[in-house]
Length: 126
Image 1 (cartoon, rainbow, N blue to C red):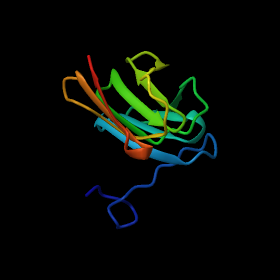
Image 2 (image 1 turned 90 degrees about the vertical axis):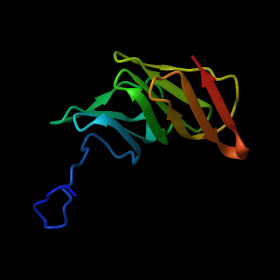
Image 3 (image 1 turned 180 degrees about the vertical axis):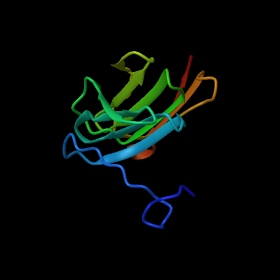
C-alpha cells in the first residue's frame, strides 16, 4: 500500500480544472496513467502532474484501457469509442450504436473487447 501522510496509506491528488466526475483509470506504469470522465475529460499523469488531453468529444467517458501508452481506448454512452495513438485521440467507428461501459485491450494490442448496454459485446481485431 502506498505510504500516505494521513496514515491510511493513500495520498489524495485532485484535478482542479473543472467539475466533471472521473470514472475510469488505467495506466501502464506509475508515470503513464490515463483517467477519463464526464464531458469528454481525459487526463494523463506523467508521474508529476495530471494534464488534460483533447478528446474531441463532449460525451461522458466511462472506461479507459490500453496495451501501451501509445495504444489506449476510452468508451462511453452514445456509441463513443476513442483511440489514442501516442499523439492524439480520435473517434473509432465500431459500426454498432449503443452505450459502451467497458473496454479491454490485449497486451500486444491486436484484440479489443468493448461491452455495453443490452448485452452488447464487441470484438475488434487488428
